[in-house]
Length: 132
Image 1 (cartoon, rainbow, N blue to C red):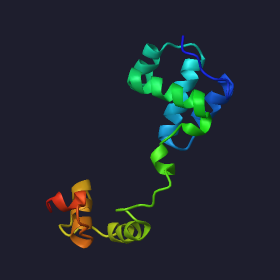
Image 2: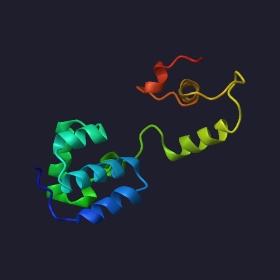
Image 3: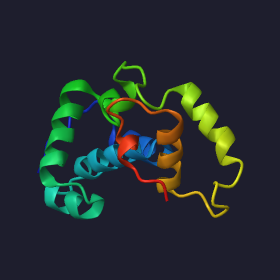
């Protein structure tokens, strides 16, 4: 059985899992909650589709740093956006209100092509996308 630090009660872990608005955070709390309830790492891996090693890393992170260590840490890493800056996303939102140039539906490829055509950043992954 995996030892889970007592930062939160089993019920509080469940509440955080159920109430989280962030999907990744919810899945992380689900993982810790299931382990705290006594499920094995193997069972939790099957239920969550997380790998055993990732579950072990989450446990270490939770046990040493507490509940605030769960969730998508990339969102809280303090770095400013480098490609999809707020002004770029605002312009994209405006453009998406109209149909694409071919009159069809917007797809991820068409959005990437629009971004590449309008904001050609050196080294951007969008530069490699063909217009379709």
